[in-house]
Length: 144
Image 1 (cartoon, rainbow, N blue to C red):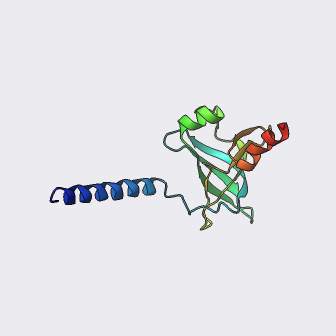
Image 2: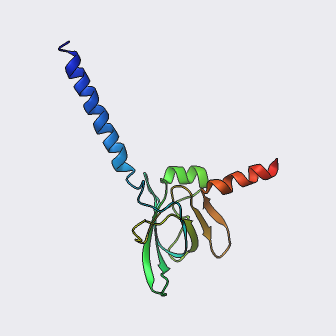
Image 3: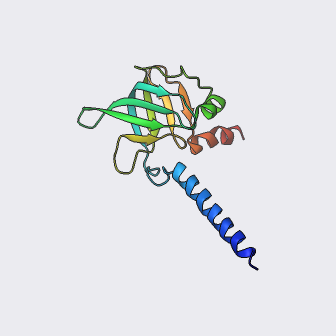
């Protein structure tokens, strides 16, 4: 009986610490308005192709026409390479993009593009990232 108590305490402590780490890492849950995605006309300032998350820093005009600096977080470089064929030279400063995705609920110029988002090269119309589930299901349904 005496050895069961320390084992139970250690198990409970391990589970608590492990789950806290997972929640801290994915702290974006609830911070972004996924019910009302925004569309932003962006000019790339910087592209950070890194793990565990890549980042696009870009400028966009607000409703009054004033340029505002934004940041958008994506999945990691490994996933972007595997799923979308991205490389570290995929985006360059000055590239024009149309970005659709959830903005921070507090209105900050911050987006999370790890899911339910789409990025299009404005000049060519080429979609370089699309994780919008409804659009993923459409081609399969049309094939039937």
